[in-house]
Image (cartoon, rainbow, N blue to C red):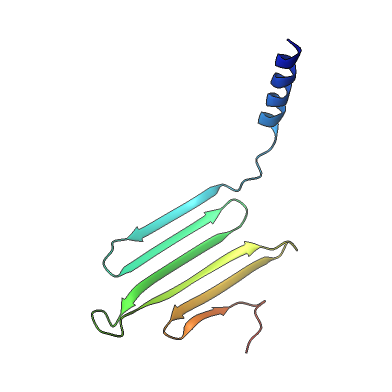
Length: 102
């Protein structure tokens, strides 16, 4: 009987504990498989990302994917960090106020 009471107490405490897991509050996706895609999501803890991409020079030897997007998150310091980026034949190119310019 004692074990059942202890187990029930521990179970009640575990169920009453707040959830630390962020929840998805928005999710959109469009991927037709025809050379382009887009997606976006946002979570309850301030994380968000959106991206779209498409094929360039389709059907040639220099076919590649060109991507544009952005993401944001709240850092350990409590500040919101935002990054916009492109990724193409020139590589990944991020831009943000907190990223040093070269």
